[in-house]
Image (tube, rainbow, N blue to C red; front, side, top):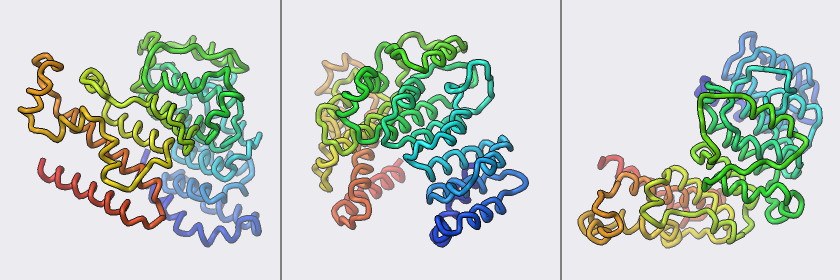
Length: 385
């Protein structure tokens, strides 16, 4: 994948999209002709990004099924990703049946058992996100079941090196399908135990069996496939945690549900610090604050309150004094100061990112000053190292 060229194409389309938007809904045939005329003879990542941006502005809705096929038949991953996501964005929330079939063709879990198509995981990830966009806010049961199964999907071959991004894409899509559903999801899809399953994906534990559904045959076929990677009956949180976090975040976004937020645990002991992955802490802080939306404040005190006391004490105090204070708890072992520093930076970054989301476009000077102060602090730390 040539992502820089992909992003350049996306940026160029955004630059001209405002003028092109005048044709949408009025000169549909002219817009369709213009898009197809820009299709290169040899697929290029710049054109793939171009298609994605046009889709974000709702301009790919004019393309017919034959036009979609012309772009997909090249089997070029970048172009496939651009067209799948772009078309889904143009049809967001529509539950369009014809385009659902197109997306299902690129998700191996939804293919017939006798069809063995070799589809790359980045393309499958794009198709999964496309399904989330197409069914945004619908709480559609079958798509919810599929996405829930895909977050914790076991490796089905020895080439599954992009499993983490696939699990993350499935989690984001699950959150989009049930966007803002909150507690209502318990009454509509209570038998799926979505909240409990997502928390298991985040915190770990024994794998929960999926409920019987219309997709049971697909689950059985997938479980029969083999891989040299053995994970046992425990959830692999290194794969599933990000997807579970973003799914839970989108389902309860701006709900101010303190019970759900409290279940996203931060490390409070040395044992928890030893086994935590610092990058997950950024995502946890962001997810908690997106749920507790009204509690976000543009103050240094609020940012500091996001950091657990054990991390704050070790990070801010003298090393010798800290080791003396916690000598009994660590049992004579040395502190992993690098991990403590990473935890502190990631937690603070999650709080700053939460500020950015809440105060985006508001011109809030206090929030801007806090973000600027944090950026300068990190730059100084980088120079010092």
